[in-house]
Length: 145
Image 1 (cartoon, one colour):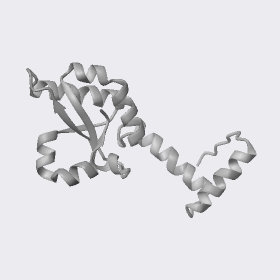
Image 2 (cartoon, one colour):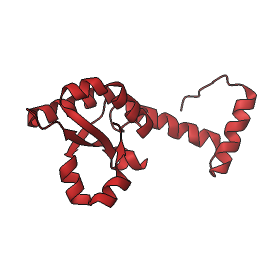
Image 3 (cartoon, helix red, strand yellow):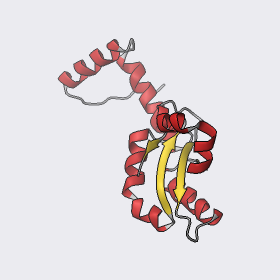
Image 4 (tube, helix red, strand yellow):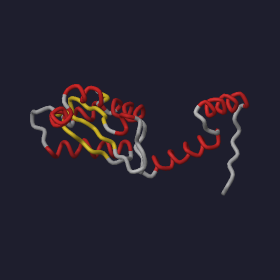
């Protein structure tokens, strides 16, 4: 095992140790988990966390709307904060009905996959609403726009 030396202000180290202890963990175990997460995100085994997904989708809203997207949301493990190795990014999409088809859906999935470096699964809003029902849909989907 190779060691790592990092220079961090002692007050910040003390605060991090307290935060780790509140979670019943050591600071070194939390740091190992964080490094594992960064590695998994970097090689595409783990999607980015919800906040980063939403920020990226909102930043590219104009590009997504140009492909016909009227509504885009996140559901599944990323929306719940339960993503793990092997998770993909589940998105629900509502397309403008005028002239948009399966190829446009594939383009949306490709754009988001390239943007976030992770696998993307798309469900249409109508299909997911029918499967989950309105109450569950609104509980489980986090709107990007």
